[in-house]
Image 1 (cartoon, rainbow, N blue to C red):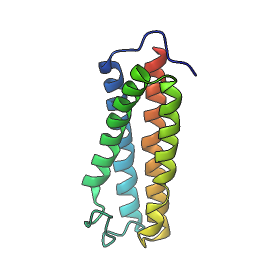
Image 2: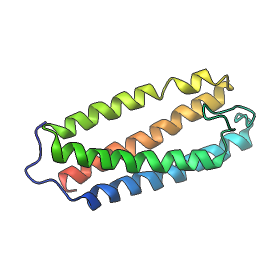
Image 3: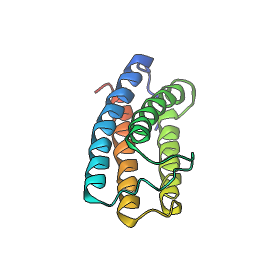
Length: 137
């Protein structure tokens, strides 16, 4: 895909990332509480950062990557030939890379699959929001 003839301004991408992030935050926090209530979220499992995986990191890591991803998309679309295609490849690589850590936590299977679903919940609206921002939808 080639670079669009006019690149939407940064606030368009920021808005897309924020909307995607808020959507991901709401859905992932709900998934977290369902998993805790269902008994398949183990609060004794330590994250790679060293603390338990509570609702706060779930919320932060739902919102922040969507905003950062959307801003990265703007930079790529603005300054790199075929920047949108590069963004899509980067998004796919990051998504695939984040599929592996949950399996290394030693967490119960239900928690691992919930974490995997949470990654999808962040990735999909972020990429869709960026695509809409670029296409002016």
